[in-house]
Amino acid sequence: MSEPTALGLSARTGSVMVAFTVVFTALMAFTYSATKPQIDASAAEEKMKLISEVLPPTSYDNLLLDDYAVLGPTRELGLDDGGRVYRARQAGQPAALILEATAPDGYSGRIDLIVAVRADGSVSGVRAVSQRETPGLGDYIDPKKDKDKKAPWITQFTGLEAARLPQCKVKKDGGDIAYHTGATISARAVTNAVARAARYAADNQNRLFAAPSGSSL
Amino acid sequence: MDTQTYREIAWNGIWKQNCGIVQILGLCPILAISTNIVNAVSLGLATIVVMAMANLVIAALRNFIPYEIRIPVFILIIAALVTVVDLAFNAYLHELYLVLGIFIPLIVTNCIVLARVEAFAAKNEPGGSTVDGIAMGIGLTLVLAVLGAMREVVGSGTLLSGIDMIIPGAQPIVLFGDGYPGFLIAILPPGAFIALGCLIAGRNWIEARKQARLRANPPATPTEPAAPAEPA
Image 1 (cartoon, one colour):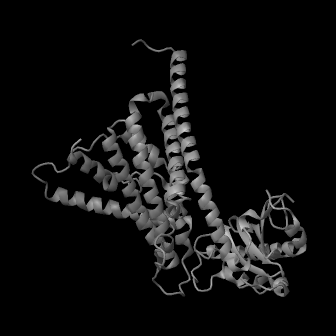
Image 2: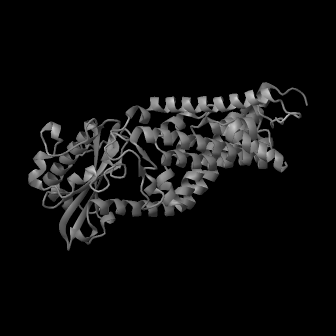
Image 3: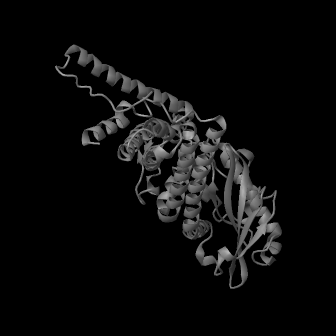
């Protein structure tokens, strides 16, 4: 075989590269479409499981995942790109709001939370959805990582009454919320985000419950 | 290939060319993930799956890949396979995915996968290449497990924390009681470097002793058989 020209070599390797790209992109596209229904179903199930941790399933009777309003960028919740608010109702009456909220000032970046606020303004529960706090130090904000399994740190917010919300600050800042020494920043970020979200829910309750399902606010 | 060759490939992957402590490849995920055993072993297992698949597919296709563009093609294939594994785990092994999920995309960044594809799968039969991928993966998993154990014991005073995500109801072992304040440097990246350094030193020590013993009583026949194609 004679020495290939630069152009010939480029054309040959280029077309092989394109062929490989097409074949393997097709493989990925096929897998994606084949697994999508299954993945969506598990994602919804997971979301319900997470919600049931912050709001007992007995306290509402509507189809929670179908009853939501879409929020645009909301500073009070720390949502730069918007998020969703799920509305829990009992016999048609407002029971609780489940808000997606973000603490932008975690030690290692953003901490995504879900916060459930009852219609009477009290906090029903809080969970960290995603966080990158220092393992073994600041990550106790996630009850799965908290070494205290009986009373994880984040359960301090469970059932926090509306009257106590002004004290929803870490003790170092003059509030009621305990934290682990040496890891104040993570706890403070979550605590302040919860306080902001609870205030936002109370201030906007009527508007949030009244919005038609699936609508954007 | 016969069993003897397979055994050599396996021994190469697990000890002689161990990617964690001999080739020192793929440090980024090794150091980042080995904060406890459960994370470390989970990443190791996911890497075994991906390395076996990548080596198998590339060894099977090796005659169709032009030499000049082999690296982009390898990366394309590895990335596609990782995506497929990621989606398949998410859909069909969802419980496991919740544990391994965040680690699977990280594997693409692990240069050990590309290194084995380039050094072994591109020149060998699919069967041997798959064994090489699995053996290298096991070698990596062992290093990760030891590293994870060292850092977890020293750093947080526990073993197997997070095991309940894999075996529901299982409890982590608390070694030094609840009052252990933790030793932060072991959890942070410097601790990973120090622990890995200790492992490398330990392996070198074992090898040096073996060499010394070999020099003291030389065997009648050479015990060291030629390794299979193993470029630097």
